[in-house]
Amino acid sequence: MEDLKYVTYCGLYCRLCSNMARIPKHASALRDTMRKGGWEYFGESEIEGFRQFWKVLKVLSDFDRTIPGCRGGCGPSDCEIRKCAAEKGVLTCAFCPESPCELLRKLIEKYPVIEENLARQRELGVDLWIEEQEKLAESGFCYDDTGGEG
Image (cartoon, rainbow, N blue to C red; front, top):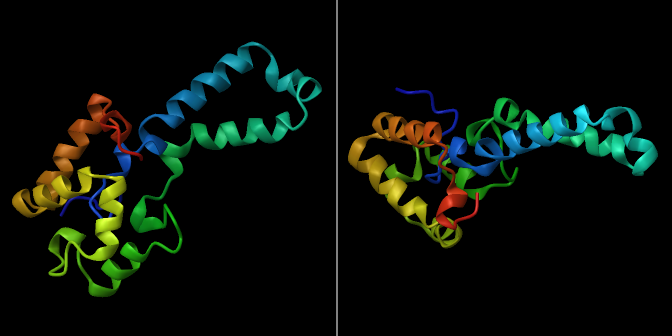
């Protein structure tokens, strides 16, 4: 079994979310540009609250290395889908006999790719699906590219 760290119960893949795929790169680039311009030394004198902004920018720069993934608690702490799947002991919602349930249907409205992902998980199995997702991540793809949120 592949590492499930980035596999959500609902059918998304964490490494394709902008929180991992895009934000760290952009935050790092902005931080580097600002550092070269001396902002870490004079920023607070120019903009009130700059020190806090600088700390947040650092956190965002490291998101791809520090976000624990869905199974580690990333996302809403009260995620009903995560709670339900864990209670039922299903690997993902693709393997739940009640899928798609009402909880999942609501999320599919926001992230239509979930339906395709769950079908691919059933068709290929999770290991091969993860390999597909990793190839997408390596190509630079992000859920934002589909018009979906993420």
